[in-house]
Length: 192
Image 1 (tube, rainbow, N blue to C red):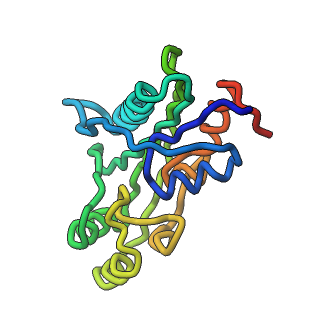
Image 2: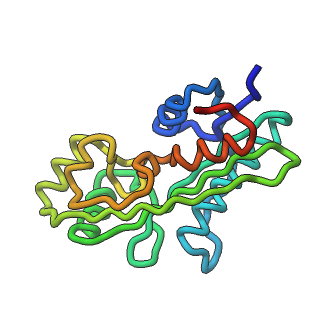
């Protein structure tokens, strides 16, 4: 019987991604504070939050391996949060128009009582120049209000880009599967 595996997330995006590895798993909502620490870089924040989510769920499920992941968008050295609504999404996309944005995606695989296994992916998205009408059409079509950066790269959001520089195309969706598979193999899971 394979080890018990829990994804510390209720994100449909992360759940779909993890299912690609064909391992049985459950999901659990992590209870963790996502407030950045003073002076914390977006990369450090993504890594810390991934570990905090895994730690919170592992504490409630002794004996289970837990995967935590978090993504932080960085624009001009500052973290970008999820927009939460239409106008905030429009404003974010207008600000990023014609610019590059970094997306830091942290992943942590852990079992309570053992040292966590951590990885961090960095993806750079170059936005094409967008006018307000294009932004509004996109936001109204996909309503990306729960997505860091106000877009869904796995959907119509790909049309907003000039280029993507990434080692792992799944990282931008929210769970870097290359790193996750590597960490799961280190933990003893059998994967191809």
